[in-house]
Image (cartoon, rainbow, N blue to C red):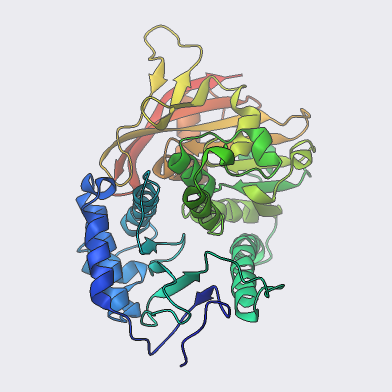
Length: 445
């Protein structure tokens, strides 16, 4: 295949190329020896593994299960849905790569990036001549021209196809989630039954429409990278990058790359599926929308909403955050989100802070909050954790009806209602998965 000139393509998958793999390996070693990766041996090994396999053209080994088995020693039949170590480590690698390249004065001929939802690294190299040196087909190469071509008026066909593909994939992600929930809820005809446990007795006991609003992990990643905060107003007005004028061109470009990624967290899918199974019992309809596809006017309707994720990953949760006793707050001193006990009772701590960042072992916290909608007609269910493991634990609790009923009774809440409530969960996190979660505090409205 002929070399592709810069004027012909911005992104190219090029086989039969003659690229000096040694140059990439030297750059990889520079990245691994930098400050961003010194604090995580696991993330460093992960990056080295995927880059070396990509250079070798071994794409079959760059899949979640294969990485889990070969790099992390998981058994061949391990459950990737329950064990998220590959996804969690990949997310940490993305953040560390962004931190590495955004350093002041940073100049490198090549860049390594890992797009959300993929384990195949992308190597970005500056053009050195009209015909760029190229990588094997295992590596996606982004060739960027620093001086725009004045004769180019419209994007080339290959670039338009790549952009269209990214758009279609992001749309398909949410569409597939909607289809999965619909299939679970309608896969067989049966006489509708009633769920006698809150919050489902109220949500599915009415004729109002119910929508699940999934989180936006890319927004959380951008906030972590820039150190800024995205307000609900900015998010609602599609301003997804905080203080862009303060960012360097390189930082701004990385943020724009992150925004092209998937629009739903990995943990949201099993939660949505579990809710779909509950909807099947009552023959109720449930829709699914990504947070970035919602407008403020949607939140002002009389429907029921189920919001997944904390305000940092799902800014729409901020609509109700001020109404909570157990309220999410971001502490810039520790660089993480925490749960503040706004009205502590005797013997209760004023805050709950996770000790299990990333894939580490430790404890974390989450909330299950059942509230009135803004118009006081519909209902709102918030399932949110200080990290993804916490949100997953909240989802597991509300989809396990016997355990949910027992938990509500311990809190003095009648499972049949009509109370609204908050339940604070404490959980143990291990390698990206929640375990041993239980209610440690409650509020009844």
